[in-house]
Image (cartoon, rainbow over all chains, first blue to last red; front, side):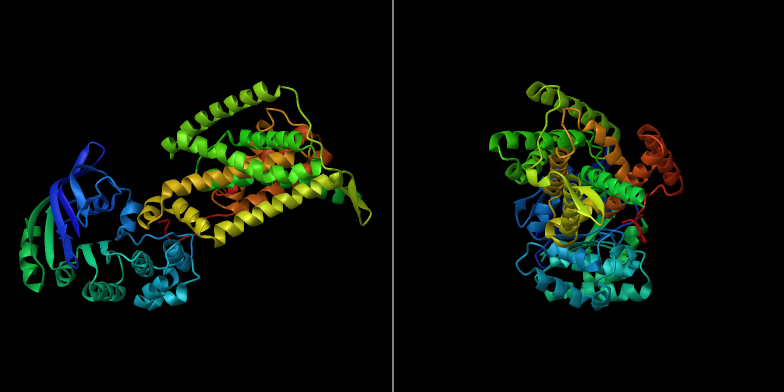
Length: 230
Length: 294
């Protein structure tokens, strides 16, 4: 589905990612873990196209998308939920979904399907997204990504900074999506237990390099914790 | 009573001209953050479009309506060319933009002088717009009523388009969070170009309206550009509806001050009032309220 091969990414003169190779198989869930500053978000931003790669290649379904604009990658089936519960704050909840649904043949149905996943948003459709709580905004962000009918969903710390009761809801929704089939997920997550529960494969990133990788599942928790402790 | 009504009408009329000049800026400056000093010259280009259209068509009545859409396209295309060649390279560099677009405005003025001459030219108003309308014992010039109606129609059309159309949603999304819009599948480059086309096109429409106020000359735009920026800043940057209130309030205040003092003193007083207002409310009439700006 998505393959990043020997990718190097940075900001200005500073390189943050040094020759990282990550592969997300079709229908697969891959988790990327690591401490703050390990380069997880930078890696995802490069995967989406918000940051250019200095070297290496990125392919989507076997086609090279290394220099392709983000909105064109979205058209090819990639969706991205950035860190920090981002939304179009001055637009209503419904408009946040409509702006993505516009121009899609099944637009209205897609909005309804996304809302079914997060029923809490039903009562907030007319409220401006900037006035929603962090948890509600994150649900909206995931719903918005799903309206693009993605085949690959990229999630950057979807439960970060959200109150525990809502975290459980969001985790359940993500697990539900990963088990539904037809959707690959690339997940960056601090919460190791949840990440490994969802993922079939994991990578541990430290200082911009892959320091450990393996298969997901609860059995790998100790391996990941020890890899992250180094 | 007569004085109050007359000054109120003059204020509304002045405000409607300000609004037409500022509406496009509310998009390109207010929404996109681009300081386009050449916006005034897009107004001038719209005015000369009306002049050329009338010379080609001959009939003043027909040419007014024909020139409105043509001026919109002419202004819009000038804006798109400016955006595609220069401005796209300097988003988030307001000072550079200011200097570059000021340079462009001088070039456009000179171009107009070379083509149309330095002297002002007249674009006669159609006969059905000449003379006043008598209402409740007061008389209101038809041309000014027409400009007022045109300004209100332009605002309503823009507000509805921004609020309810897919393009409007794309523009607002791009303005609020560009990377998020891009990763939501919106081509932000295409949206920028369209936003600039509409904003600059509205300047062209303003230019046509100004031909009804008197003769036009190559430096027509310079008389309006500062006031137009003031309207956007006072209204609240990023708020199109703020521009409406600001334009009419400034128009009315100026009209009453002009009556009690002189045009120059009134201008000074208006500037002083704006400075005082922005001291207490730097964000303008409408502030952006949100839990988080993200």
